[in-house]
Amino acid sequence: MLEIQWTGFSKKYYAKKLIDSVNRYSLFSVCFRCLFITKLLSDYVHPLLECAFYLLHQVIEVI
Image (tube, rainbow, N blue to C red; front, side, top):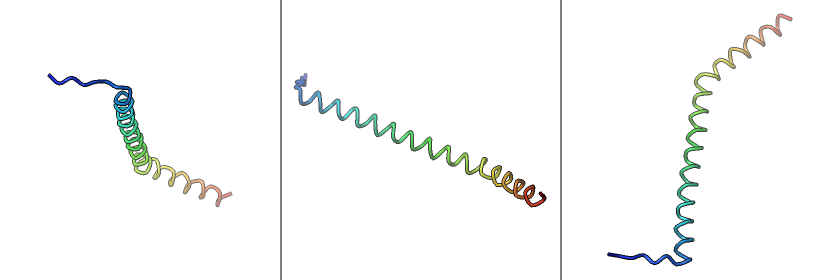
């Protein structure tokens, strides 16, 4: 059976690798959420905003 000696260097190295992978994953998930929310906004909210601005513009022209 292979035994791994945990020296101070290897503990720091593996801890750093773990933190880096977690950071990379969380950064990826944050980016994914941002993209998803942006897509949602562009698909649903953007047309509603365009409609609202158009109506507001019409109201201003009437006044």
